[in-house]
Image 1 (tube, rainbow, N blue to C red):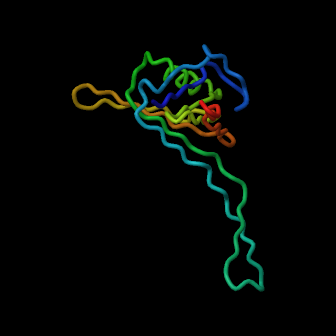
Image 2 (cartoon, helix red, strand yellow):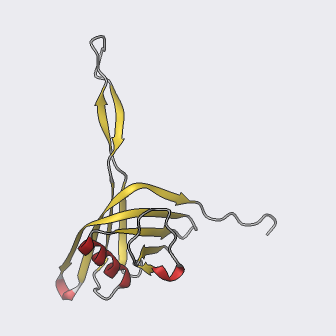
Image 3 (cartoon, rainbow, N blue to C red):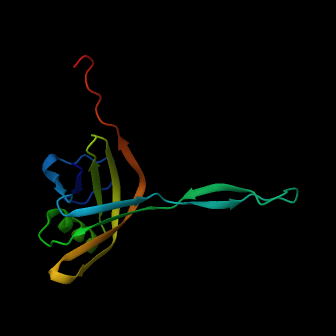
Length: 146
């Protein structure tokens, strides 16, 4: 019930509007998606009067997203990510959960890998750099009394 779409063409912003036919599904071959938000750097605020080391959060690093599943060269979503890898362009990824909640992430492909195992099963992984913060959209609230 989870739908994962990637923009077919390059984008410049997480707020960019993508036409309905400008999305390519990747959830037909994806088996797992893993997101890790960017870690903030530590700023040492320790002074002579400190009793212990004191830290504050610095700037947030880039997040990472990994998509792994069945490798299929004719998959349109995978093809869009391979094209982005080739020309270093950005792609928008939209994940719509079964609950109706959505998240959009602006990404740059860092690595495309695949492997073949027993019985000719081919699997692949895309490692993506997440640019900026994800945009979360809650599921629509059903009308009252309905």
